[in-house]
Length: 81
Image 1 (cartoon, rainbow, N blue to C red):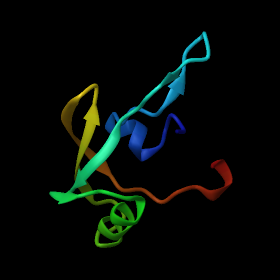
Image 2 (image 1 turned 180 degrees about the vertical axis):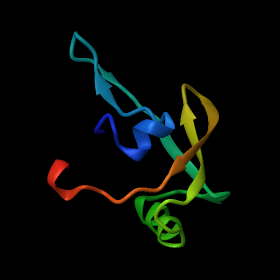
Image 3 (image 1 turned 135 degrees about the horizontal axis):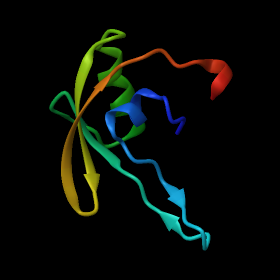
Image 4 (image 1 turned 180 degrees about the horizontal axis):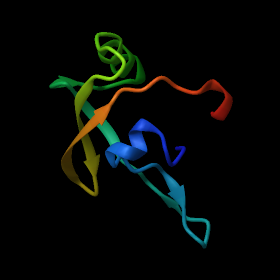
């Protein structure tokens, strides 16, 4: 995840590898705007209902707990990722 992406700015944690190469699981989005997210398609459908610049409520599963975050929807810069 690019460090200046909307997700990173909102505090969403990406899956990474540690110095020993072990996978560190990141956050899993489980709801957006109060709607349950079970698949990538669900996420896209909720995002399509929003406008660029909108602040959305995002619920993520992190370390066995649900965490509430707020994100500002931004356009993706195709050149950077």
